[in-house]
Length: 535
Image (cartoon, rainbow, N blue to C red; front, side, top):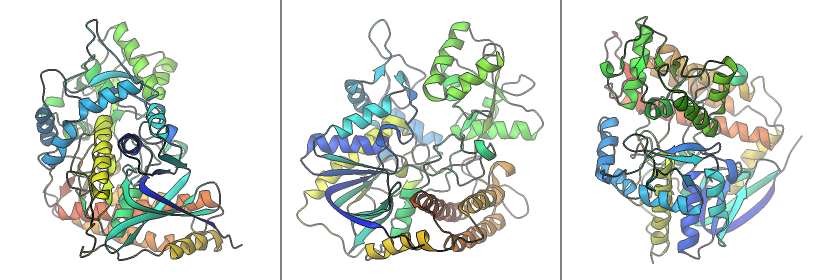
């Protein structure tokens, strides 16, 4: 059966792809500072989309009293073993407190002590009641009179001409509608990539992961296909999380100063180092040496601290609180077992993403990147994504005010994308006969390949050049098989393009892992030579 798509053509001044943290704040900024027409295209609904969909219980990037933005830059540079863009970190860090105050003004509840000062959690964090942070952001964006929200539309490709971005194309995920959107400038804020590797939990629970499973690397894939320069995909992120629930551990480690211990009760965290990657590496090594399971030591905390942890996890990871209550063994009675997740590509915690200038413009003129999709600037967290959304918005306004926009002469950028051909591509998937392979099988095959040959959980995150080359060969074969898939409806079409995006990102991750010869970040990139020696 042939399924044809209705065509809708839209015109706007600025297109924002992705209505998460950075995207909403960029729209809010543009709405307040200009009369330009703004359109947010979001494949879900901006009210509960992105990394903040379920809320968060702390602002993890804040310049506390006695600290400076440069202190934050130094912390991020040290944690990343020096592979950062300090100019990007500094421009972000200078805005962390400002965007926090803006969010408080919009209705975010930030906890304060008896003196009216923010309650800190560690050296860079403050406590919040953030279960409604995303609805607050969504309302701030949508309430601007010049901002239009286009929910349930999946963008797949940029429209390009003469080295400049001219908009994007996509389709409605609920109805058979093709969208061709023309814009003077584009901000990509689609988030990072989850689901590339086989996850901790199998079967029905496979999407119980640290990073949102609906973040599929769409923005990365669009940039790669368009010829944008990307950076540091080999700096994968592996989260240290509570076992099985994959709930955050920072709330425990920082909230009650819990140490990492092995099954013998030995504190091992200082033995391996305290950077983000070293905390994961130490846990892997202790288990490998037979000293596991590993835990966060909580069995000495008070009942009051335990109650605080119950409340904190209800804000962002209810499954952890439910696990404690169902077992009738809260953290004050039993230490919390921990494990590493599968690797993710996420520019909010590492430096992977688009190569951007200080205004967050990519190497494609008129295309700006903000949040997890922007590279070079790790340890963003919520406020860093907000800050980059604001920086990108201001950069867009300056770009639009230029009398002449330089577009030609850029290397590797596609000359022109034919929107009519993209529509035909969608319709081919919707019309061709089913093949022997289905979407689920390709996803499972991709995750198995990445896990076994590109440094997943089953190999303790280790890899070598031979394995990486085999991974690339097999992923390339899956990309060829992708063309045979058929979609029964536009929901299936969405899933096909999500796999397409992941496969594209997989190949770039493999290429970047091959390019870096040394082990720079333990576990994040654990490279071995063919003879077995660590590089």
